[in-house]
Length: 187
Image (tube, rainbow, N blue to C red; front, side, top):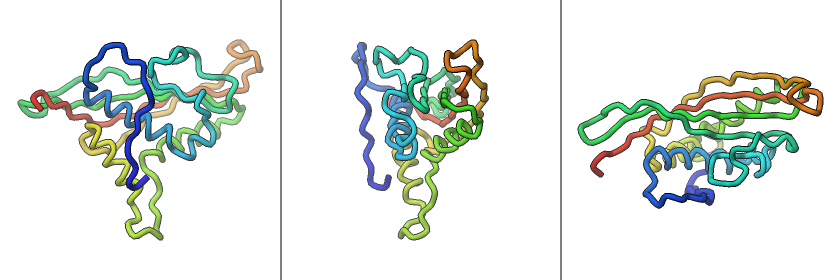
């Protein structure tokens, strides 16, 4: 990802206001996850949702694909950082579904999601941590404080026969991502 630029996915915004720092950071996280080659190899575009205004954003995760994921920003408290800025731990729910009977698959999908934000170092590169630093720089440019991301979860739940017509051949999980966001009040 070194040298990468952030290209946001098209959204159907009805209220024409400037994107706030939380929106910019959320869309940066969405873009980082959607453009990750490992996640793209298991989650097709129809299986990735992030409240862009699409007609199917609030539909259940797609059971027709191997794996699906939905990112949903949730509220958090703002604290005064300085007289001119607010500070917040932005939280994002990460809902996942994998059509499998093996819990390892959902654990491995969660791990792959985390690696989007902390890609492995390349010991053969002139700067081994370049990919990780590039991700952090993109998040900071969007409004994050440091670009460092924390993760909680996931809570994993096997699907039951009553929930699915396929005899419970899926796992659901919800984890949470947290990132510090600075919101200038008088830019």
